[in-house]
Amino acid sequence: MKSPQNSPSALLELIDALKCLPGVGPRSAQRMAYHLLQRDQTGARRLAFSLNLALDTLVRCSLCNNYSEHEVCSLCRDDERDRSKLCVVEMPADLLMMEQARCHQGLYYVLQGRLSPLDGIGPKDIALEQLLKRAQDGVVEEVILATNYTAEGEATAYYIAEMLKRQQIGVTRIARGLPVGGELEHVDSGTLAQAVYERKPV
View 1: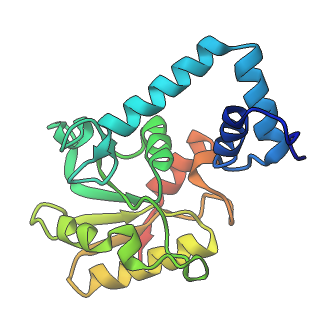
View 2: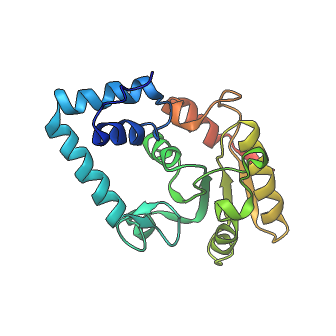
């Protein structure tokens, strides 16, 4: 759905900017823009402020690669975590799911993506060298691969497992309590916890 040619350029820019969100097409972006302008200008200003704040203050944790306001995030600084176990997940949302399930008391490494040759995403694009360095810190005894059971997630898990096994690092994979093709973000806590408890060597 095209906007009228005589629409204000600021409005067109807002609609175009909203289309960068996943699953948001031209119609949805237009509806969102009009809603923010007509019905919720306070929410719009808060959204703009929060986006700017996040962009200006958030960095990647130097240990786990998750978003943080400090060089080392609070989770990685937590002395009560089991530092011998390192759980590898694809995205920050997966880490949050793991924490909600309370099934992992160790630390994490967030890939911020997954291997996908068709999309041009290779090992260097998901910071696997940083993961290898972290796994070789002399403290980590087990790396738990908790990538999604999708084709890309499986390929990523296989690549990482082979990389770590060459260095004599213990590697396990979460069990298939998760549905094939499912993603951690959408799995209930009980199913996720069972998958972690039933992990097995790879």
